Image 1 (cartoon, helix red, strand yellow):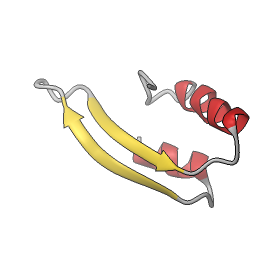
Image 2 (cartoon, one colour):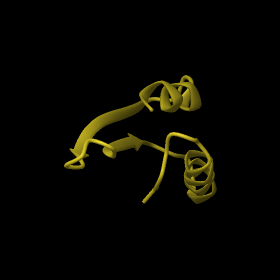
Image 3 (cartoon, helix red, strand yellow):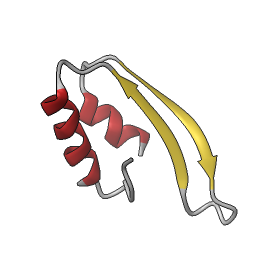
Length: 59
């Protein structure tokens, strides 16, 4: 997942930190922090991250 997010974010500055792991270890939560220029940019990142195969949920 980290590689996919790094590839998507390209040269943008961001901070990716581990959050939680499910008891079974099947699911991992991460926090992605970045600064965007506007609401449209934020919405596009949301849409794009949801489409990654390794991402189950984006909040």
